Length: 140
Image (cartoon, rainbow, N blue to C red):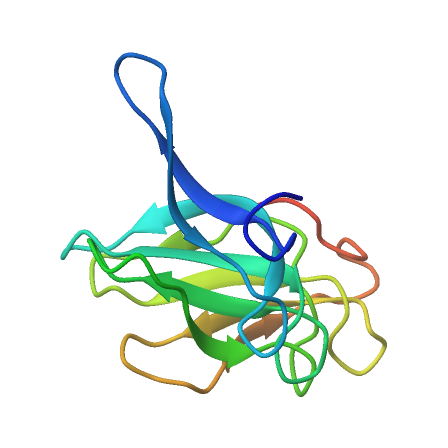
């Protein structure tokens, strides 16, 4: 995956096609193996998800504060919401939303919310078996 600890990186591609590493993942507890795209909040900070590392080994939602060069895990997957397999989205209030492919009564998946400034997932809804099992696409 690359990066200082082989856990992946957050990077930007400049206008002249140069790649600049903004931060590297260090695996546990900070997350590893980023998945999907990052999103930017109203302050220019980046948010994203990983599919590994974190307190439970199931990944984290993370933040890279603009100009900081470091990754801050916000919340670990694997307690009430297991890993995500897609990009996240952020609303005008800087609340983060995404899908989990392994949550709910039958492990059919869930839509989760992480309110701005919070470190606790909120369930925005569970996927029912008759809807679409194991969501793997980003929401918009």
